[in-house]
Length: 285
Image (cartoon, rainbow, N blue to C red; front, side, top):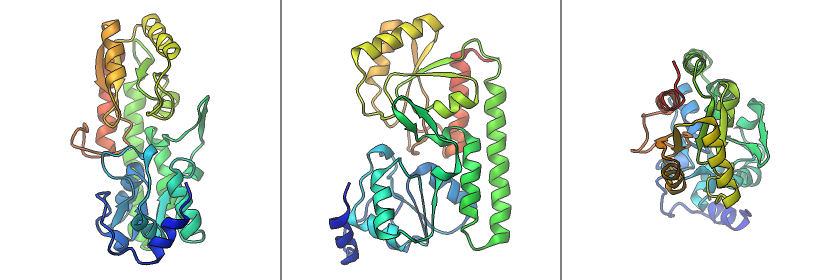
């Protein structure tokens, strides 16, 4: 998406533009701008500085478009934390209005998982992947002693969550799980599971009849008990498939945002809820 016109509006004085409910009500006063909720969670564990999230709660981050005011936020932030290759609007804004400004690109901090649809952006669904991102953010912050203590606490928390997932999914009757879109590749890879996704990496893609037939056949063959859906995307296909197969449905949350429908108040709590849902569905001891 080209931001030339938006950039001009932002630089020409968009202070009067209406603010978006994006966790960014402080507008350009925010010290740190982040592209989405998982990065917001990381940054907020490391600093007390104000953080503005470009992706509003309840909005699919895949679909993000920026207002002129948000482009200006990106320009004026003391630090921008984003993930290149995930949200094109943010990539464009960073390149055009702050090419040399302090920033952290999370994509440089983890080994990408490539699927037939492309590079899977949902790296945060394996908690250990957040640790190097936190290290990169902490290196950009000014209060070294405070940040070091907070970074250690965050690292301990993510290592504990990683251990909970590893132990909790180590002894299961089934390793296969079926979900609406292919957000859980990192989780499946790192914890010995097999993800079967109805749609691809983009939750807005409609599955073909052939793909639905493949998922039905796999579900019957592997004995799955549950079709998972998520809070920010339509559950219609998942529930229809579950009804056809006589299976249960449940939520498996890709943690792309936190809303009143989320099973937890933050990333760690929602991931623990995901673990409980997978353990129940897959018959884990």
